[in-house]
Length: 262
Image: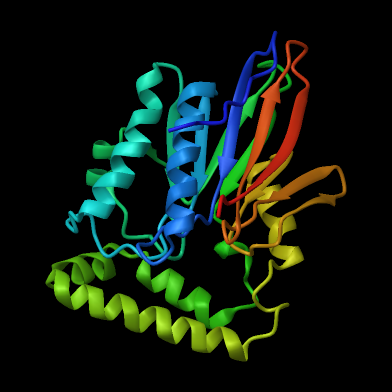
């Protein structure tokens, strides 16, 4: 298999890669193939960290679904860190929030909280970056936020995972169908981030940067002296945000897209 290699900049302190909303599914072989190649590329180019910020899978009904497809993805992710350089981190999204420790252990990755802060630069004046999937920023979508709050409780999770696998598969399809129907009735503004919520989370975590996905609207936004990066979904192209910390502690950002191979 021919794998494109990304050469990291010389004389760098460290390089991080961020991606999200891959939506892996047996029904989307082009995305699956692109992700497997992406994992190979990350393994060989060996950045310090890979962050997957939610919706790795289009749907996840529990770590106990040990299908051949899921094992293929687990093996690909696990192979990344076999280069003894790259650590892999994962946040859950609104499609795969039932991912848990068993999957993380098999894939040799670290599960992150819904909101995670990382720091770069000098200890005296660090540059702080907040990572999240982004669905919590869409506060105008009141119905979804109610479901999100309810479905993240340990009681809801235990009840869901206690159901037999075949039943969870049916429920998963039903929830996706209902979600698509609901989206047709909502305006784009409702499904986008709320500006005040973004400003509030910047202040809450005292960060300089925010990186998230979910909305599928890739863009760099300025909120005063704060910067927000929005990652794209993998609909027709692999996409990732590369962050390189240079020796003088300055940060170099680059958004990369690569069209799927037909």
